[in-house]
Length: 83
Image (cartoon, rainbow, N blue to C red):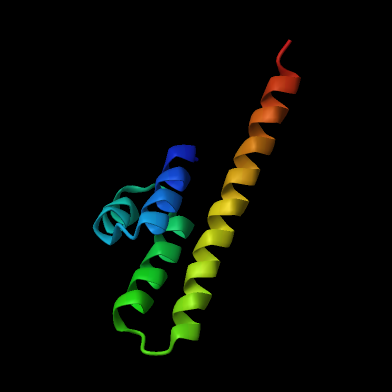
């Protein structure tokens, strides 16, 4: 996993940089992140019901948070196993 992808996704979402978020969606190797971004961008551009857009945004943000938490745990385990 590339932690930088999650940081970029969070930054682009916060700054409403949808073009950069779309590029990240295509380039990332994390298929779950790519799918979450795809669903959010589709809802942002085509959905008329704000609650659906909000649901996809929160889903994307929860996944980014979860992935960053998993990365931190993985790094701590690697450090603790290092002699």
